[in-house]
Image 1 (cartoon, rainbow, N blue to C red):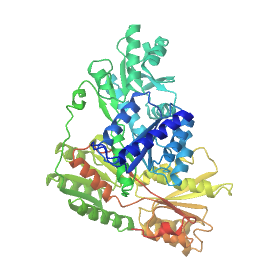
Image 2: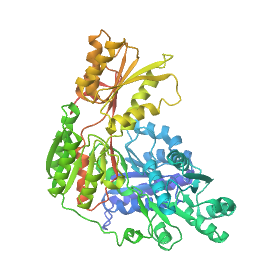
Image 3: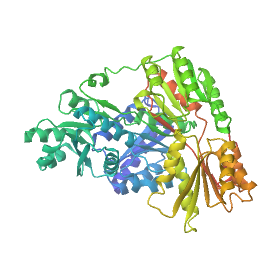
Image 4: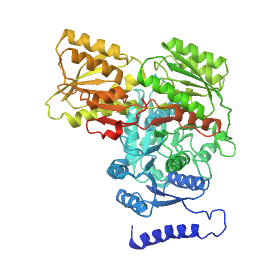
Length: 612
C-alpha cells in the first residue's frame, strides 16, 4: 500500500470513528463499537462485487458496526499487508476472501494463533487453523456440475460426452479441474482451456482461436457466468450450434447469470451463494461473546435452468417461514460417553429454543427407519436423525420430503443425494482421520518403517468410512507407512478389547501404532495391550478420535498419545439451524463443528471443564 493510500485509509477510519462520536442525529450516527476488516482478493470479478454489496447491506442491520474494505487486486503480498493494516486500524475481526489459499495459509495461521478471529469466505485453507469458513464445497459443486452435464446432454452410460472445461489459472480453477477429472466417468471426455483473468472478452477471444475444440464439444463448462457468456458469443460468431453452456455463480440483476439463462444466452448456471450474510451474522455473535462451535458453514448450491429460473429472482423468491415446535429425534442407542453427551446436548438446547423434542433411541437401522416413519406420520414439524448406517434411507427421506418435513442429519451422514435432506450438522470425519496421520508423520520420523494397526468402527457408518479414508489420504505415495491389518471394534470398548485380545492371541504385537476410530474402542484396546504385558503409549503409540474425559485421562497418564476431538455437543447448532429454517432464512447445507486435538504437549487448561 502506498504511503498516500495508507494515510487516506487511516484518516477515513479515524474520521468514521470521530463522526460516530459527534452525535449528528442521523440514524447511522451511533457510536461505533465494532470494527471489522474485510480483505477481498479483488474487486474486478462479479462474485466479489456481489459479496461486497451483500456485506454492506447486512452491515445496516447492526447499529454500531463499521466494515472497512480493502482490495488486494489479485496480489497475495498486498493481501498480507492489507490484513496487517486492517488490524493496525483496530479491526476486532477479519473477513478474508483469499487470493490464493496455499500462499496465504501461513499468514492466516499466524494471525489466528496470535488471537485474531479470521473468517474465510469462498476458499478455505487445509486444516482448521482459522475461526470459521463460509462457502461452497468444491467436491459437491463438481458433483452438481456432472449431474447437470448429464441432464443437459442426455448423457448415459452408452453415450460418450465431450466437455470443454474453461477455467481460470488460479487455485480454485486448478482444484476444480483436478476434482472434475477425478470424478468423471469413462463416458465423459474432458478437454480443458486455462485462461488468466476469467473475463467475458478474454474467454471469447481465446475460444475464437480454438474452433476445433468448440466443434468437438457437446458442452462448455465455465468457472463463472461471464465466462459462459463469452463462450456464447464465441459460438455465435463462429456459427457453431448445438453446444450446451453451463456456468457457475448465477446472480440476479442486469447482465447476471439468471438473466442469461432466462434469455437463452446460456443453458444453465449453478448459484453458489457468497456466504456474506451468514458470515457477518456469525461475526457479530462471535464479537458479542457467543461461541456456537461451528468451524465450516457450507452453503447450498442450486442448479438454475429455463425451467426454474423465474423462481430465483429476489422479488419472486419469498421466505417460507415455518412454525417449528414439535421435533422428532432418531438417536442411536449406544452406551458410550460420546452418545450420552450428545443426547444431553440436544435436551439442553431444545429447552433454550423452546422446542418440544421427542427422542427415539434405536439400536438397529430398521428400528431407526420405523421411528423416522412414525415421526412423519405423526406430522412432526422437523425430524433430526443420527443414522447408524449411511445406506437404506432413500425411501424414508422421500416420504419426509413428500410431507414437506425438513430433515436435519446430525453427527452422521447418509449416502443419498443432498437434495433429500435439509442440512447436516456434525464433524469433518475425513479431517479427523487426517489429523491422526499428521501426528504420526510429525512424531514417528525416527523409524524407517511405521507399522499401523487400525481398529475401525461400525462397518457402513460414515465416521468409520471417512476417518479411514482421511487417514489413508495422507499415506498415499509414502511407502514408509503401512497398515498391516484392520480390526473391527464396532465403536464400543468391549468389542475393541475383544478384537485386540483375539489379535494378540494369534501373534505378538507386530505394529508400532494403533489407530482407533473412537475413544471407546481405544480404551478397550489399551486394556488388552496391558493384559498382554505391553506398555501402550510407550512402546506402542495409541491414536484415537472423540475427546472424551476417559480418553484424555489416558493421555495424561501416558497410555495414549494423541486424540482428535469429535464433539458430541451438536444440539445448539442443530437448534439454531431449525430456528433459521423457522425464520424463513436459507440454511447451510453443512455445518461442521470446531474441534481441537490433544497430546502430551497440550496445556493442562485445555483438559479442564470438559463436558464429556
